[in-house]
Length: 233
Image (cartoon, rainbow, N blue to C red; front, side, top):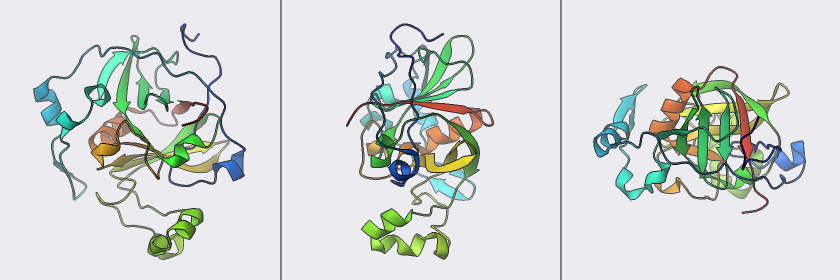
């Protein structure tokens, strides 16, 4: 049962760089209360943070280090009390507070700071992380290409944008499905550390590359995902 302070209605937001959700799945999402904030149970030390967000090489790609001191400490990856009301293995995205939680056993959750793009406010529901990919290709949807014709070179017909740190999906992408169909939305990495904790002009739910790599390793196969939405931004 959900803990006090959480509403019983849950929503999922479509999670990637397109704006097809309203046309495909219905109108704007209903207002839903966020997760009650909790204090980190094991707040990371300076030394831990330096190692956690250091530059690294992965899959032949160089990931830049994160100047973590310039980010609000509440958005650092950390283990907190699980106040989501969800069981172990469920991913919860709190749009308003800019947090993503992975519920764990023993009453804890791993919490990550996130950035939300325009597409992060468009759809209500619930879904499954159907599959995951390391260093994915990015193919902007036709609607985005219509607004930004310079992206046509990355269209599906042209093979998309090659993997790498400059790819909008970053080092990892987690693909969200509903009723066996791809919603065209993603949880994904980014090198733009300034976007964490903020709403940005495009994309959807983004984590620091180092954090999405950690989430990728922890999240179970076919994990259920719930997004706590708000009425407006």
